[in-house]
Image (cartoon, rainbow, N blue to C red; front, side, top):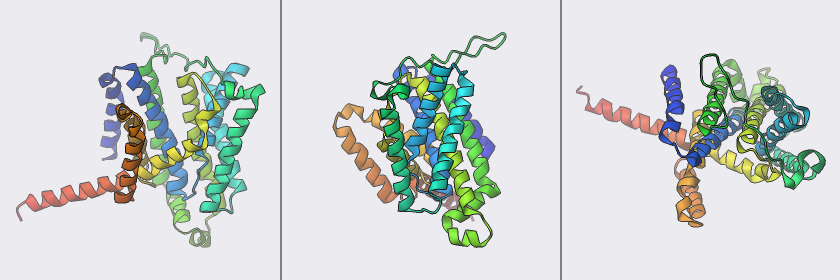
Length: 323
């Protein structure tokens, strides 16, 4: 079943740019893949480890600026800068977790929110390095890939860029899914359900919280590196606090602790505002109304709705089979 779903996901990634040839929609598809990375990274922290992190935009921004500055100021090769940006974001996530290891619930939320404010202010005011509100421009896409006997794969092409980002999103999904299904995932779930009971079983809750933050933040850093190379421009306002709430909405709408749910949530909350753009300013009202209805009637998110629909279909099919 999992292999079939994996093949279906790969086929969907391959087919989507074929159906959306317009450069505007291809750009939105790439942003959608970036948001998928952000959502599954946060879900690993929140949905599995149960840590209410409202500073995810900070790790996103660290990854974007770290990769860009390494490339433009130190002439670091793109993929090395990409790996270092992931590592730096992961270390930042671990540092935040170590600092706030005794916090939980809304206290952790406030601490992580404060961290996001600090990072945004650093990006905004450290003008000698980040250019502050002036922004960084002319950021190049990832280097082209030239394989013997095959056409050069240039990532200035929107379709190729989508394939690259979506491929990494699928890879990160598979890695996090393997972690979630392993004893590591069971350990994190135990901490999420009851930290005191988990500690009584000999689980080092502090260490596993640090691990979850590090992994989720590293994935967000990768999303930031791809964002910078795709958009070609960096300004601090791309990583304001509201971005964290948008990512959180993707996770909640999709269904926390499922991975596939946040993927669906990221897709819906990226595409829906574009579909409502024809309504002008009214689109924000419709967007908010749709989110409110989803939370009221699907508290478990889209993943819960899918499970209920599958169970209903199963009952209907069984009822139609002669006894």
